[in-house]
Image 1 (cartoon, rainbow, N blue to C red):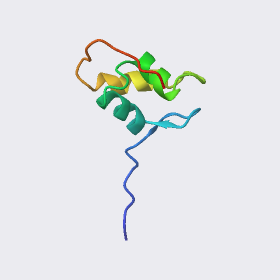
Image 2: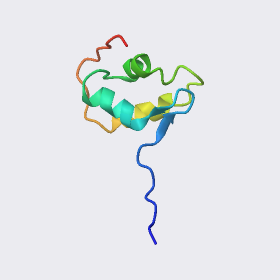
Image 3: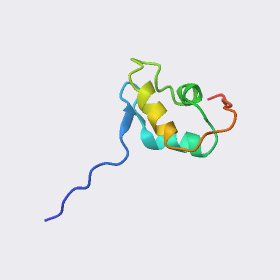
Image 4: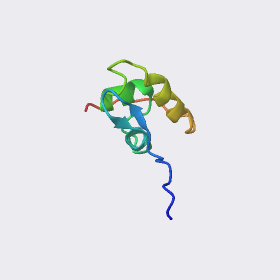
Length: 73
């Protein structure tokens, strides 16, 4: 019998279907270095806004970022 492993790539924004992996990718590649930049890049947080705190918690898991710079989508 095989046991299913829990999904590690959780949905952060249910309104726009943005997963944690997408947020982490944007941050790790330097495309978005703050919550407002993540919102601009992915659209997450523009619906009901319930995910803004979850996005913030993901970014807090990284060392402090230098100056946040947003790039157009």
